[in-house]
Image (cartoon, rainbow, N blue to C red):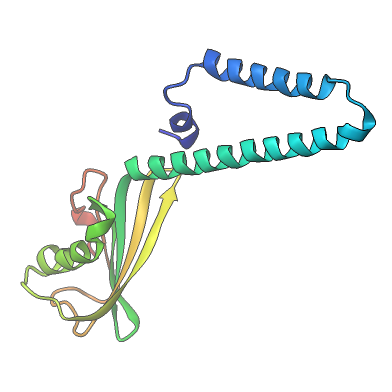
Length: 174
């Protein structure tokens, strides 16, 4: 679901049009009131503050809805395994349940799926924040794992790709 559709989910077109029409009428009526020139600057000041407050409230609402929309997107993880500060191998499009298990999932993929061993020796990791891929409508996180030793059975430069169903694509192995 696109962000615009998510933003107006639960509102009908009649409701949206009604709010726009009544807001426009209220603003027009407010500025049509005849006032002496001495008080007119106060009207503009009050109107400016009121409209600014309305825009700030609208911006906060849109931002909250955007964060809510990002949270319902499916999440994917791209992992880069580094050895001696050079690319060793990478994993793309790995399914991710939530952003709290990124490091554990990245190491679990290396330990269980890539080399079928129990332990991977690493010196550190770097988690990249999630970015929205608008074309696929997913939230993609990044993880860099700095390895002490190469992962046995994996060639340098290998690429592993997960399909949309969450399974490793066999032909993607190089």
